[in-house]
Length: 313
Image (tube, rainbow, N blue to C red; front, top):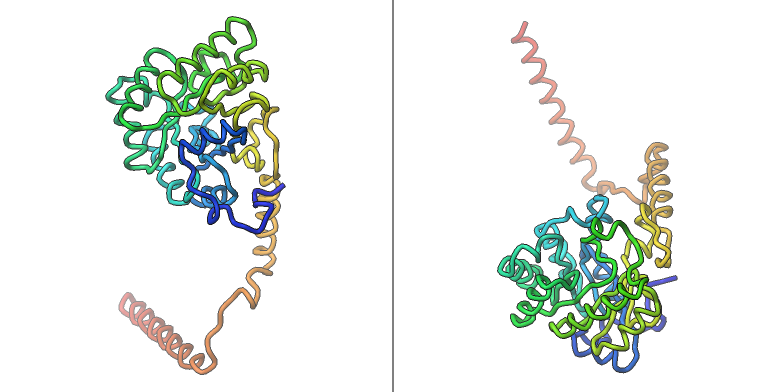
């Protein structure tokens, strides 16, 4: 399947810039919201052109790009580096920057400085914050009061992976499901413009979606959410270390890339690349003059080497 639009019009030139009111209007009208992660300008440009509503510079880049086993190792500076890159490739999509581990919970002032950098230096429109603890909620309220839009994140929150005991579905018991609903309502009251629901039973996600006036964005949370988000490397088959059941693979870029590189190596070692059409030659009118000049350099070099040998002897 392709990320290209079905019609001949290019979404990047025909669609309006995605704003928070437009996302709310989509929820109200029942139009699903599309979200994908992006980590560099090239991918951002392609996803934006395909019509994705929200580009999320996710802390998942710790795993997909930087090779870490989880999201906990990525730093603010590393995240900001990728946010800047994605901004350069984004025209119409709404750009959201993930707040990495420890960037929010070490004090409100520090959290506000970090979020402010994502917007001021990185060019993000909004930031995403995991959880709904009193500490996190206090930060969210302050960020919103500063004019920084915030996306919430409930259910499986990867930055709490050690506390949760792994990548497990959340909200399966009455106590857990009720708490998820409470947390979602609290986040809405704090001023978030949307909430990501990750690895949550469909029935639970549906009730939360119906209870909120802001959009829910599901990832492994069923069809009833107002939108869906996936990691771009997952849907393109580039990240093979994990294969969650909620990911639909739209391409197998890992296999295609390996095949392409193998062919390249074979062509180089067999000296079939580059061929004449892929190479450049001198104009016939200049060829002899250029080659003569280069032969003179070689002659001078040989003479110099001979003198050095004579002196050494």
